[in-house]
Length: 344
Image 1 (cartoon, rainbow, N blue to C red):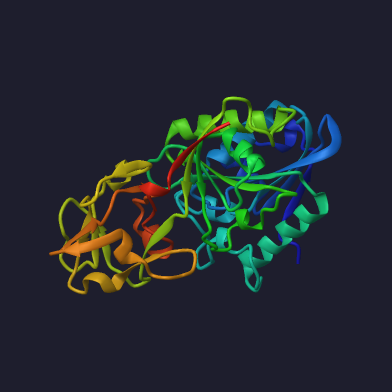
Image 2 (cartoon, one colour):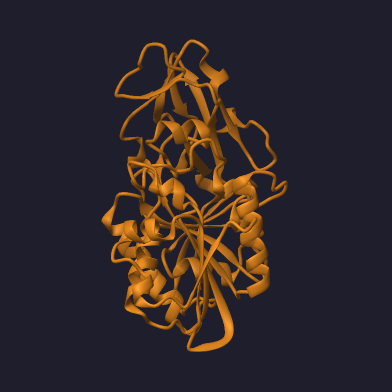
């Protein structure tokens, strides 16, 4: 069964006037194809893989309303329409009871989101875009940044359309960007916090460049990229009891300061308090590297009931959503010694 509705060269009468109305009009996952001014190349776009990350959708919807033609053919996918439409709108990462859509791009494709991911991959193989951008928001307040699994000038150039911060990761979770190749770079762009108006503007301006610039796979002269290598994930056990408060909450495995996301892309010194742990202390947490090893002690330690950084770290993708902290991870961290500035 095909899971994607296909919308080809949609006219203005096929695009509802607001993003919310447009999603209701689509009713489910959709593929949109727009013929370019030139048809010898194609570019790919994915947005709303998570239903609570709307900046990319808003940017795409606004662009579709202009009825512009992209420079080259465009194929784009909006997968998590049902999750986004679940009330309250744009607050649900996934549809109830289903896997995280951005963890489904590796086999086996044996459930609804997996089969949808398989269909998206098949269409990308059919249309052969020269590159793909996957647009997201963070669940906490955060500046914009990009994430790649391969580092070269093409991947850097795609991210630079939106941001000068780039995370190079060797973690493998089944995300769309893990399908990237040198033949077809696939990058994740995090436009900023899901509720931040600045993130909507970053998505809009970056998408305009992506769809209309002649060359998007080469860094412009003088472009400065801030690189972060080999992040790890601070993960919690699925049955962990957590809370967000300014002090320890009795009965929780971990209590987290509600403004912890203020550290996103900030250097935190050794000894910075990340939270307060319960009686079981260490058992509810692990820090996973790309090999799947628990390297907690290299990054954090527990003194009394305080969870502290063991060394200077850069933290990012800190979530203030408890359900995401438990189902995915609380934060990513990279050692400060692994950062470098790249000037090209």
